Amino acid sequence: MKVDQLFVNGNMYTLDSRVPRAETIAVMGGRIIAVGDAALAEEFSAHQLVDLAGSCVVPGFNDAHNHMVFFGMNLADVDCSSPPMRSVVDICDAIRERAKVTPPGGWVTGSGYDQNKLAEGRHPTARELDEAAPQHKVWLKHTSGHMCAVNSAVLELIRDTPVPSGGAVEVDADGRRTGLVQEQAQAMVRDLVYPIGVNRIVDAIEQASTHYLTEGVTSATEAGVGAGLVSHSPVEIAAWMQARRSRRLRVRVNMLIAVEALHNIAHAADEEPLFALDGGIHSGLGDEWLRIGGTKIFSDGSLIGRTAAMFDPFEGGAPGHECNCGFFQTEPEELRRQIIAAHRSGWQVCTHAIGDRAVATVLDAYEEAQRSFPRANTRHRIEHCGVLQERLLDKVKNLGVIPVPQGRFISEIGDGMKRALGVHRTPDAYRQKSFLDRGIPLPGSSDRPVVNGAPLLGIHDMVNQKTSAGEPFVPHEAITVEQAVHAYTRGSAFAAYEEATKGALVPGMLADFVVLGRDIFTNDKDGIGETSVDATVVGGTVEFDRVGLST
Image (cartoon, rainbow, N blue to C red; front, side, top):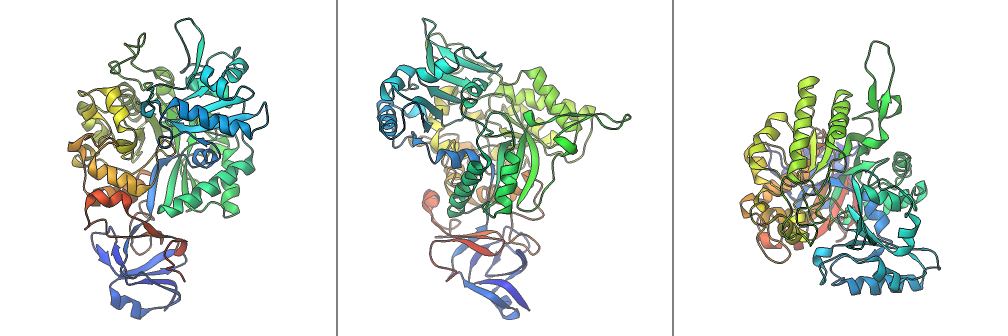
């Protein structure tokens, strides 16, 4: 039998308990048709024969929660992340340099800053940004995506705009705006720039997906499309479709539609209105490259920004903010209404909840929705599920809820999270092993561009549980390499209802896999994050090749 591709001489971890290891994969029409030992190769001839030279191979990585458009757009911004930035002064110097090559009156935009990593331990102020770029509008996006810092020119433009519910514009002791804009209030700034044109969004998708291939990502879930906090256009779905048609989308994408894009649609007189996109579209429409998954709802903010909704105050609050318990972006009663309406209309509901109060509130709403309108196999998700009290673990299990935590946060922003939570609450943060011990599915995800989204870095952090300062985060939540790889493959596929086509090297599944520079299962776990991705295969085609496998 002649196949399209035959991959031989590999050290393949299939993630299939029936045939856990293999050396050969045969591919036809983008799908795996056979997996086996070296002798299997003798049963086939192939249009393309690829010798893997003994390399370690795993199924393609699947990022269960990321922001591809946001990442692609940010590639053109001033890089304000740390490193290279060590202080507010460094950021202002970089803004000053960008302003020199930007026409007066234009926008100077930066992204990725984290006040927790700056020497001053605070956000840049409007006054400092004025001094750096006195003739420009300056917009600095926080790495969390939940706040931004702007200069006086931008503050003046939004001066008369009412601050939306679920947002805040910080003022100092004298009542003057400092330049910090939080949560839903960021819409006032975004509305000065957005919506972005479809062609620019397509460019961002192409740039992001091309980068993802270099890191072994073959599938990803885009967490918020078409409206809301992270959307760039009300017709963003059209941009994704254009990227798909033009083959500029190079990885497979599951879109979570922002709840703000949904509306009640009355139809038959004897049926309840649907809460959906026009035409009644909800979860599941699409193909193996681009499909509509769940609906994305925001409940609260972030830990490092101290806007997540908590039962008790954050630690070490600044003067005047000692009792800060964060806040809801969506008021609990409206949040409940949205969740129940989406559940009733057939959506997989995917709600951002980080603080322990927000997580508990979302679980209550999921429970009420299921009690009022029973549905089988809903797989509702809690995006991040950042702080979960132990008493609620069984509730997560019993409701069939899928938590979507970000192991990568442990290293990159773990120190800031520990300072915000304090010693007594950090053990509740970003659980992993607690979920697996109870049989709760665990996906792998990054929330990129909040942090560096390379899956091998995420796997490293899930296994090692160390912050960037070298401090332990929550050691008792550490998991094995096998469990972490399972999360980034089979776990993420299950979270998107795609376990029949993704996540393992099994006949009938999509031929998506990654060739690694070393065997991460047998080598020192401290080096997982330094492992190279040598090649990435999507649908049997070598889409990234660092070592010349396909030549």
